[in-house]
Length: 283
Figure: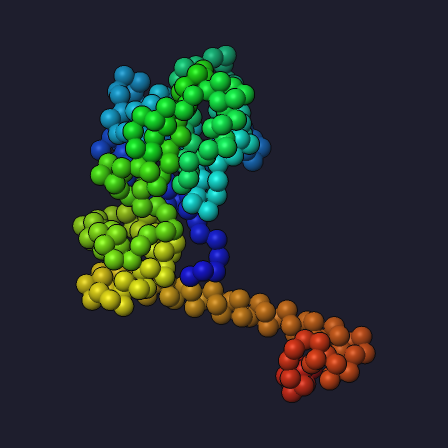
């Protein structure tokens, strides 16, 4: 399960649906909203369908009509470059319309989501743009002093009570009580696609801890039997594909060295394989 880059964004979008599941009648979530004709796109655009309706969920109280979200996985950090990139995208969203002021600047908000508090970015914004980070709730910080309402969400600091699934969208879960609690909650939602997407990513990101828990707990093993089977089959498939790719790579190298006139014994020594193996490939 360590091979390959984890696809955090789809799981985060699924977690957003979970967070706002009681208010999806007034929200529309567009993943990877493309800007213009060129390949420039916002991570996520959340559109509030009715301007009059206030969003109750803690991470969405800042929302207006158009809400730009930039998500960083636990493996990434949020930098000042990210701040300006997303800020620019938000300005472009406002300007790339059919008529002037079709999207008003006061209809826009920006949300940055990351696993660790972006201390360096915040410090630069405080010094250079005179913005001020104010903690509004656990893991939710408003950057005050800009034309756009801006918030930074630090997922690992979020409330386990109010933002359970998004708070667990990380790669450092602990075997035992933490994973047992996760499994207990998931069992009630196991048939729902968004919960499946989030849990699938959590399993992949915390594979060793999940394996440890599976060995110790029969109920856990039964609950995730299908998930483990699917993950192991996919892991085996990737392993076979990688083995095939390596085999093709070494075969090409050996054939190339032989065509250049290098003796079989020297090829074997250079490539770290046996003379018999080289002869098998040359046959």
